[in-house]
Image 1 (cartoon, rainbow, N blue to C red):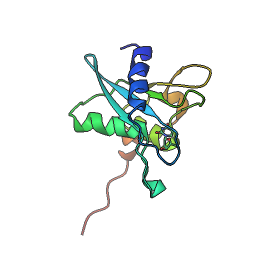
Image 2 (image 1 turned 60 degrees about the vertical axis):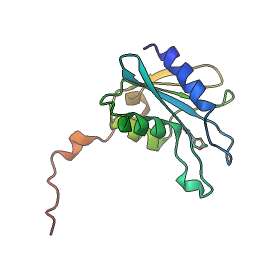
Image 3 (image 1 turned 135 degrees about the horizontal axis):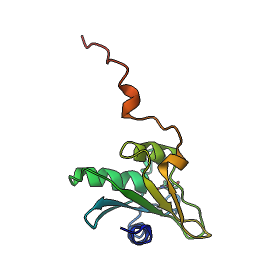
Amino acid sequence: MQSDDLLEYAKRARDRAYAPYSGFTVGAAVDVGEGVVVIGCNVENASYGLSICAERVALCSAIAQGHARIFAIAIAGPESAQTAPCGACRQFIAEFDRRMPVTFTTAAGPVKTTLEELLPRSFGASDLSSVRPLPTK
Ligand code: THU
């Protein structure tokens, strides 16, 4: 799927955002292949720290719906803002593909990049492989 098309899904998902505290509404869309797209939006909480970003909602939804692979993600925030994924979301995206194509909105238009550019030398499953887990009691 073209990144522009995926971004349109993210913009529609943004309308579902629950952001009564920040007013910063975000939608995300992930391409799971075969023309299928799974969306997410940010969901805030009165206990602010519990709020969850649109990207992680979309990725968790895709996994919960049984999609094994995620090919790309698009993120749409307020038209006046840059909505590059936050640090936590970058790490979350890396779990699925350390080079995933990422498109996000800015006031000057969409930016097309990759997770590798946003989070160079990311930490991932392969980095765990040299260490054996501690024995359990
Ligand atoms: N937010 C996202 O959903 N994704 C981003 O990439 C940046 C920030 C949300 C979190 C919070 O609900 C609001 O935007 C303001 O930080």
